[in-house]
Image 1 (cartoon, helix red, strand yellow):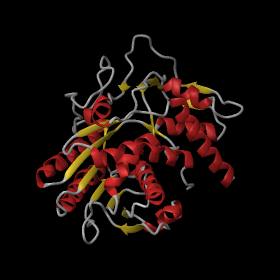
Image 2 (cartoon, helix red, strand yellow; image 1 turned 180 degrees about the vertical axis):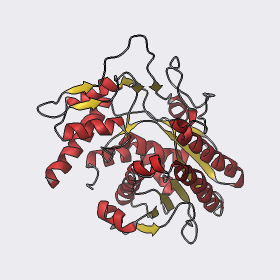
Image 3 (cartoon, rainbow, N blue to C red; image 1 turned 90 degrees about the horizontal axis):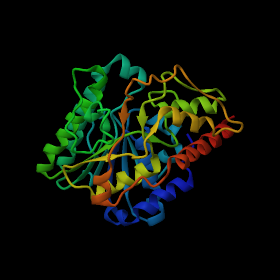
Image 4 (cartoon, helix red, strand yellow; image 1 turned 45 degrees about the vertical axis):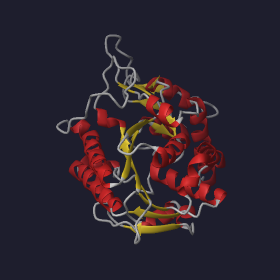
Length: 349
């Protein structure tokens, strides 16, 4: 898998320069380092490490070190990275402890998510409990939990944006909400550990876009890019009315490093964009990226009487407390992603 674009790495560094001094000489333990979010965080860390001479060392917990090395050889080869193979539910932190823990591991391949949902819940809950317990051995360790906006449950159609104070909660009894309910219980493990000196912060992720977003999974925008890259019409299986917002992964990474260092212990922060769009609008924008453009198609026309679903955060807390924002506009985010995909497609074609 190709390296991230220099412009994206520089964007993260430029938005976090005042954060990195607090991580000089840090011992970082990162789980799920081979995933979309985890690989972005590891690569942006290594870029800052090199540019600013931070002296950070990172232990990356992965399920399969050989596979990680094949897919991300430039990260595996870094002298600042040590690969540790293991299961997040049983793994131990590096000898000597960690000053900072970034816990990204939870998701499994879509097939496993569908066929063994109980295992997914177990990885989320027991894995987080294990990592929090490991962090508690190093009193004062900072801990960033990759959570999800799905903890809130379905967003009411009349609520434009969900804030962290929204009282809704995902129901474990509903299979469609089981993931969100597990993420919330995982957060609670960390919140309880804050009293034991773990500086635990939850990053509640909403929809993201950027290089390495899977093109054939559960992410609608990733599927749109997969269609466009193959020269197919960009297809929606529904009517395209659901309302979403997308944050570029470079902004996400800048937020995560800031939350790890500056976030309030025991607090949760929404991570996403407030720039709401329908899926149909997003599909048309992606379809316009190839030259020549491809068509966008939807399975059916909207029903004027229906109320479209929404999944849009309020990011006011992060703005007010930490000065964060979604700096990369959607069209720029889509173009950056497309150019990275096309560069990789040309290189391997």
